[in-house]
Amino acid sequence: MIGRIYNTLKQNPVLNLKQFQSKDNGKDIEDRTANFAVRKGSDATAKAVAEATGVSVRTVHNAGKFAEVVAALERISPKAAEIVRRDEVRDAKTQLPKVPKEALSFVAEKIEDGKRVIKEILREWRQRIFSGDAQQGQAARPSSPCQTIPTVRAVAPCPTVTVNGFLCRSTTTV
Image (cartoon, rainbow, N blue to C red):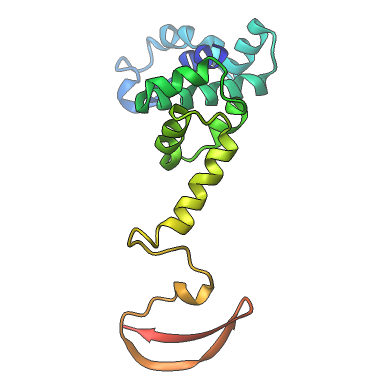
């Protein structure tokens, strides 16, 4: 709840764009700044919300990030978002804001399937990404830096080079 309040009250950065500034050469500047007087300064909104709710500013920021992720999760899977809101996922408040955007649909699917620990879901996602891609016809994560050297067409072979303890033969590409 604190996160939603904070995200709602945060100053919209779009309002600072030139197109929204005064056309009367600053005559109405008092009117516009009066609306944002509470928001002046660094973390003013977070400080105001923290004071009103009796928590720290850091807690307000964390709650804001969590609320953003839950909103994104709800767009993907309303059922998974509801499970997270009911606090049935053990480490959701700390781990869900750390979930990469690419993994959010996978996390939603696993929550719907009954998994209740985000760390375990992320571990499974990483294993699938780094080991399962080769089976799907995509390039797997390189096991050595030599595999990352692009070789389109070799023009002239170069001498062997050691990179991070791996013996590599670099080639000139065209």
